[in-house]
Amino acid sequence: MNIILFGPPGVGKGTQGEKVASEKNLDHLAMGDILRAAVREETQAGLKAKTYMDAGKLVPDDVVVAMIEDKIVDSDASGFLLDGFPRNVAQAEALASMLAKHSLKIDRTIFMDAPEENLIKRLCGRLICRACGFGFHRQYSPPLKSGCCDRCGGELYQREDDREDVIANRLRVYQEQTRPLLDYYQHQEGFFKLDAGGEMDAVYAALNKIV
Ligand code: AP5
Image 1 (tube, helix red, strand yellow):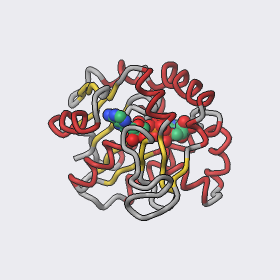
Image 2 (cartoon, helix red, strand yellow):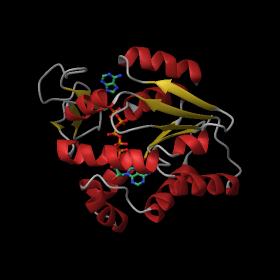
Image 3 (tube, helix red, strand yellow):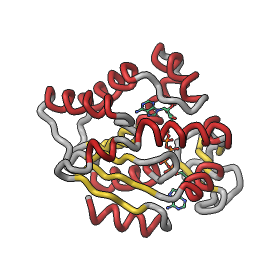
Image 4 (tube, protein in one colour):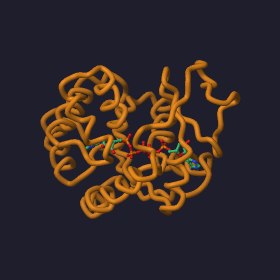
């Protein structure tokens, strides 16, 4: 099974995507994580991406399309879950040709949405483990020990782009460039809309039903 999860920043794509992917044995291909790894490793693509990411802008399409194609082709799980790709119509068109080239198809395209005030609260309170990448939230899913990952004991940090000024820009970019994907996908087979404004377990139950 191949799945696309898309929606605004902070809606829970990463949190829910990781859970579904691990339960269904899918590769969780999170574009933001792939880009952050490239930035850490100082690859050519990572160096190019960093300035865009720090400002909350989209990284150029040619960079992200090439990176995701490699991951899709290398995937040896029973399917993949795309989180954060595609993020505009040009990327969706590039994905469609890429899938056709490799005789693959998408089974579920799931649009997650939540009110903007929830998104801002979720992003402002997010904490991530520097060692294993697991996500927490100061208020909604706090770690047992402050500043320390429950899974591996690693140090927790706040993402550079989770500052309020950058969040505002990411939400603007989302409205202008990513939300139009709704028109692109909503009449295609396998499209579902998911209200992701509720608590994590309720959102997961609804997502699992769709999957
Ligand atoms: P990326 O890392 O993909 O960021 P994003 O899309 O802005 O999404 P987030 O990771 O911020 O949010 P999420 O929906 O995954 O929420 P999460 O589950 O973590 O991309 C970062 C940057 O990379 C982009 O700005 C861009 O520059 C670049 N980029 C990435 N993809 C690109 C592309 N295709 N093209 C070009 N550039 C690209 O949840 C957030 C918090 O809320 C967590 O703390 C979580 O614990 C909490 N939470 C989650 N669900 C709930 C709930 N139901 N109730 C309460 N709290 C919740």
